[in-house]
Length: 135
Image (cartoon, rainbow, N blue to C red; front, side, top):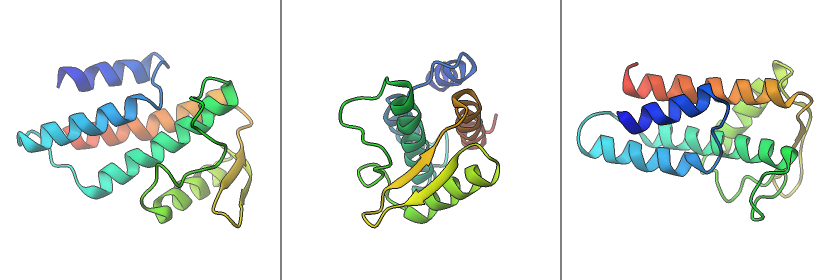
């Protein structure tokens, strides 16, 4: 639980990065194995979506790793329908704009306000972590 609190604190302090997502997924699997939480494939797929969302923010801010490409979800997402739903929801709430899907499957969109976008994605993450851990 202490490790999860570290991630919640990082969310609070706006210092959470996409590179934290694989660590959270690993921690979720460990805690599920020890019987502390119930983690489904669906949960892991949602965290993959959050990873993609944060990578896109990091690209805009210039802090993304060199292996990340604009709109390219194919390396990090298993369930396209969840990604599509998340992007549609963010567009409806004006968190993102100018959404388009390329023939190659790229999800291209603008992030007009990085603070609003970060807050939205962080809220999704925090709510999901709190749901899993019953906080």
